[in-house]
Amino acid sequence: MAKPRGNCLVAQSGGPTAVINSSAAGVIQEALKQKLGRVFAARNGILGVLREELFDAGAEGAAAIEALRRAPSAALGSCRFKIKSLEESRAHYDRILEVFNAHDIRYFFYIGGNDSMDTADKLAQLARQVNYELIVMGVPKTIDNDLAHTDHCPGYGSVAKYMATTAMEAGLDTEALYTADTCTVMETMGRNAGWIAAATGVAHRTEQDAPHLVYLPEVPFSIEKFVADVKDCLRRIGRCFIVAAEGIADASGQYIADQGASAFGKDAFGHTQLGGVGDVLKTIVEQQVRAKCRSVRPSTAQRVAEHFASKTDSDEAYLVGKKAVQLAAAGTSGYMVTLIRKSSSPYRCTTGMIELAQVANADRKVPRDWINDAGNHITPELRDYIIPLMRGEVKTQIGRDGLPVYVRLQRRLLEKNTPEYKA
Image (tube, rainbow, N blue to C red):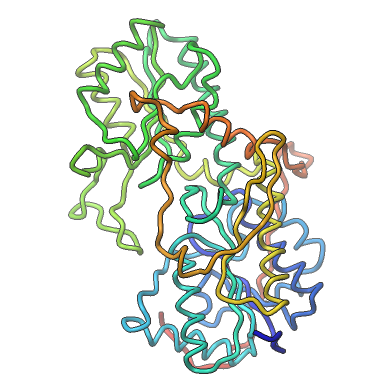
């Protein structure tokens, strides 16, 4: 596609990360450099587009945009709003193009995960169908590291570093008090893929080091085997630190911590809401192993811990945002930027691209041969995969009170040019 004349829009979607704002900075700075018209951002992702809640990212100022590289969460505003197929949700897609046309938006950069890439792909399809000149590029983001066709995902290296360190430190707490609190269970995020839980295994450098047991959704979970694993660990070293992904399930596919649609319903994407597997395993340990056990749940703190973000992760997040704009400026549309590992030692990584349709709604799980035969820890191959992604520290500005200083964008909304819309 030839380079169109017009403005561009960037939006963030899904769960925030420690480095998603670095991707936004990469998009905004490169779009200004490439002179892709005015550079707008949507407040709260695709929902903000539907509501025509847009602001001028360029007007935020160069210092504020640069500060995004050291800011956690999603500074543009995110959302969990799934748009279905073109047939089911045609009105939504038509509305998006209506807003784009009203602001002469010809470039759209969507930073997100699987569902976001699906939305971007369908929007690109519709634009072609109705002859609306539009370039659409996907920018990968997810702490779950489950996007297909990319070696890893921006956001993962930082959550891996934070959770491995948390396991290490909490494990030392258990070691100090093991005569009273013999066991600890730490729950991580990870519905269908166990990459985050797997990352904690890097902290297990010796037999004494936590975590001693790691359970991922990729291996069917057996309560009987779990009890045997814990008893064996207690026999060998006198204590047991356990990490479990929230999405571990039994051989029938039933989530161990399935809260049930009747009580908690489903999220915006139709997924069963999970949580509490740490408490379930804690109860099992206390009732069947007869050992005192604590439960630790970092919850959303794990995904936005910019104060301990990986510099490698932050730099790559910026890189994929910047590359998306460069590809768009060259006329490329309908693709997501990927990360391609050239070498792990020394670590070298470059970018590639993959059609949005091939990424949309596809999951990438931890390979079974990267999990030990017992299904309760990681292998050296998985350790070697993770370690390079956690290296380096982001230089965070510290205030006089000793706490980090993070930017907050003004996000002054543009005047609306279309009729009021309720999404």
